[in-house]
Length: 242
Image (tube, rainbow, N blue to C red):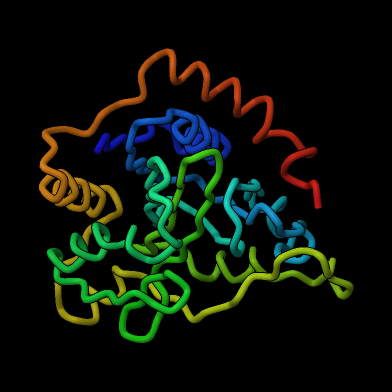
């Protein structure tokens, strides 16, 4: 498993990096990244059904469309994003891809459970939503880990006031959410910022896969990702196509 840490916190770059790695047939990747404040919508969603655009503009929250389906999610520097990419196994889609994440969180004494929608729950609250994309013999499964996200900003950004929703678009399914850091603090455990949490997660992932180091994106990959970012993930024709 190639465990890769993105050098960027720009959401359009990281979604382009996912697509670039998805195109690398024959290679398995686990991409980790932390984004600046943004709303990431599913491939079949309508922006005006899911987002308060005025609020997002006022608070410099970017709205970007991803490859996978599913519902809209809010990212900021308090949550960690993970993406598993591999050649397709041909098996029906399941929550099996979450096993490394669950194992690592259990090692950190965070008793998460897998929910019915291939998401992660902690004491009755959702802490990770996921989505998948399968195409051309490849699979991509990605999700978020809410560690110390601004939940008020999340709620405001994902509140649409559109009275006439676009019916053909996929709607999000709201769930009660919490932060992992809140759980740790309530249980009397010491807490730390997202940087330390990320270091603990990556250490456990390296042990899980028997890898020695986190790998960077190479120079030629950075160039291709940046080109894809500019040509697709910064364009209204992609981000606002519904």
